[in-house]
Image (tube, helix red, strand yellow):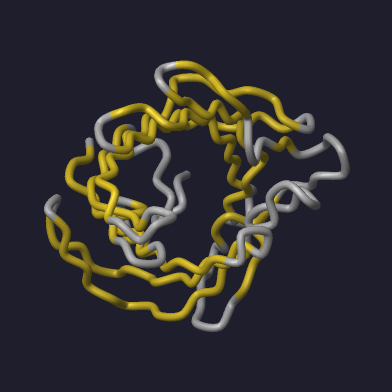
Amino acid sequence: MDHPLVPLSAIRVTVFEGHERGESGEAIPVRVESRVLDKTERVAGVPARVVQVHEYEHGELVERTRDYYAQSRDGNVWYFGEHVDDYKDGKIVGHGGQWFAGRDGALPGLFMSAQPKVGRTFEQERAPGVAEDRSKVVAVGLDVTTPAGTFSKCIKTEDYAPLDKETEFKYYCAGVGLVREEPPGGRVDLVRYE
């Protein structure tokens, strides 16, 4: 059964558009396309659902990831790592932030609590020195409108990346999942899902 805020069986494709702030303060147009693949892969001995994500800046592919998720019987959704390919001018130039539970001291991270409540914090990424993102639920029961529609029963999280020293906000809505990201100086909204 899918977590209502992370519906990996019901919602297979999402497309986001918006902008992020570049290093020199300029607005960079971004597009993020995500697809739940029809397969699982074992990570740290656990069958994990694979989600492939392509991120574009100015229409050019800059990152492709395969993220690995599994839901436990108690309803929590766990994050088991990500395979990362960074691109420049159409060529792979690195694998920044890549990690897998069970390797180099990394552990599965709690991606979404079964019962998210205001004030609840969880470590989404637990790869020391590589990926250490943390999330805190800051609001529940919200309505959020994006170009893809108006969604109810949403939560807002404050996500902190200690290695980058950056905070962003994310909105997850029942039956759809992630619908908005607010990185520093930017906003990326869900524009299509199926």
